[in-house]
Image: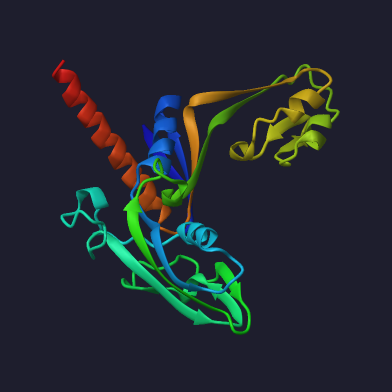
Length: 261
């Protein structure tokens, strides 16, 4: 298998992989969405809430705020405290505010200065004059297969297109070029060329537009363009690396169990 990073920044990563198959690509996607432990608010104790938002909706919104997840925390099921409330497996987020004004994620005070909301501008609720809000939220490690609050990223992949063009059948009408919604086809020296095959969505608008049926588009299942967009809980390259480790560990466990049969 060959891997090539095509794009990488603080929140997004685009990776080209060759020598793979659909099972591997989907396993990697599912590992990212379901198996990577990240912090999210799991419990809320509301002391005072005069806002128009009831406690249940407030708690639900808090659970959806992405939190930076530093290394070192344990899953509650693996912690010695067995209660999920010690400093090794949980983070306390407190808020006490009076109106008027918008309560935002940046108003939360964390017991760990590294485990904070990834975006301080996220609105939680609004307080009018005379209203107040006070609560304590407990964030714990969890995985996406338990609840979407613990999903660290949005993940997608696509197989690389195989673009075939019959030059003999082409009449140079240019209708396929006009039909392409991504504007990645061009007519040059009597030939239609795809100038950026990675941007092709395989919608086949060009195939439908060609009156001579000169275009064929298929896909190569051994070549994948993998995209990861982090919620901010951890960098995208770390997400991909940890997902690969999860697959390796599960494969090793499966191999060990199969030997016992």
